[in-house]
Length: 447
Image (cartoon, rainbow, N blue to C red; front, side):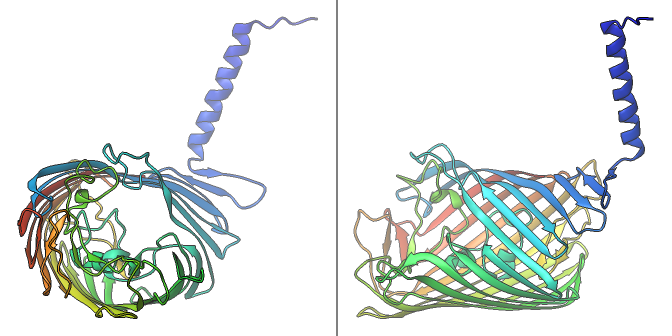
């Protein structure tokens, strides 16, 4: 007998099969059986897929940070009010494990601080592209592109750092804790989450007159006898050195945006004709040559429940290889933060981590204050009215007050606002202003 099948009947069969599959999937939510180890799929906070024996797996995530800021006085060249709207970060991140002992991490920044006023098309770069071997636990070997270790504030992810921008003295040594398009090798060791050490060697993108890239060495050591969320006691020491021997036009500028990224960032509305990122000392002139560029740092933190305190001191010295004088600068910051809703800041492996809201309705609310101070030993005056700043041939200084609030709406969304007031000495904008005010807000989404 010939059976006739209607299109409607076939559709009903497919629908029934799909329904059965959906019910089956619910019955085994999160686990897929294979001919090898079972696979667990997680979708909370990105996409994570891993075998149950944890020998293989990957996680796909990212972060988006959109900023808007307004600033005046010292922050602008003529003292008028400027503003900037830009993507601070737009990362797509892929990390995972293979063959039990091999880790990998790739993070691509599509924004590179792009916005609507740079005059050039936005471009991205690899913020990280590295792989690690963990078979010698507790030692981890790492290779590729990554930021070298230097300091507590830099070690804390930009997703969960308290203030919107890291401290003013941190920018004095920006070469010490950024990859600058180079590659490196690192050895890390973690002992039960209370002691952490790392050393690394890097090859940076600047070259000497024979074509050799700049080589850099970093070392960081942390001791944390209390190392859990809401109960932290943390101490650390840092060292970094790069060799600038025979490098033409080495950038040894001691400069800082003083908490207002928008004064000089790709895409900032005021970047090209208004923003003032002053140079407190040093130069990038091709007529001056240098030897070693060295940085030291001390760090400390304490947290109990919703209250946390942290601070760092940093010093930089650049040895001259020419007729000009050596350079020297130092600075520190001190920060206090309190979570009004009672949650504690997370902590792991020598750095602070996320605040996870306990109340899903109101989220977590954090307030903070940070004081920054920096000083640069400078003997070169800049008096040209065409410059973005005016500088006396004496020690230049800056003090910055940062007051802000963070709203962790949930584990993915964070809304932040920060007011910043800067005061300088022996350096002004070209209109003669030695102080400035700024305000910046950020909307962040993490997955």
